[in-house]
Image (cartoon, rainbow, N blue to C red; front, side):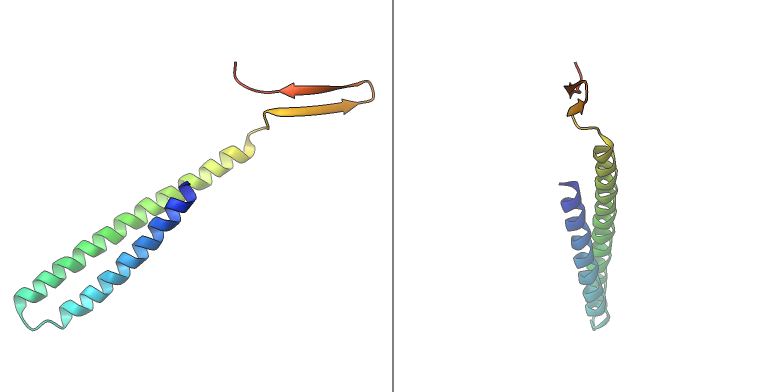
Length: 95
């Protein structure tokens, strides 16, 4: 779940950054000074949103990697062994 949310957040950040680029180009084409400042404000807001989404996505991806590393090292809760003298079952857990 962390991985999926992280990837989705990074993709959303890319989309917001693209929208900010388009808004910046649109601001440059405005004739009136007030329209330019309005579009420029939208550009800055989209840039901040893209940066925030990228930061959150990166944090989620790092969390997913650390979680995978911790779970991968965990021993299975149930194990069995077989030898020439007998066999056994091992159950691990917290009691």
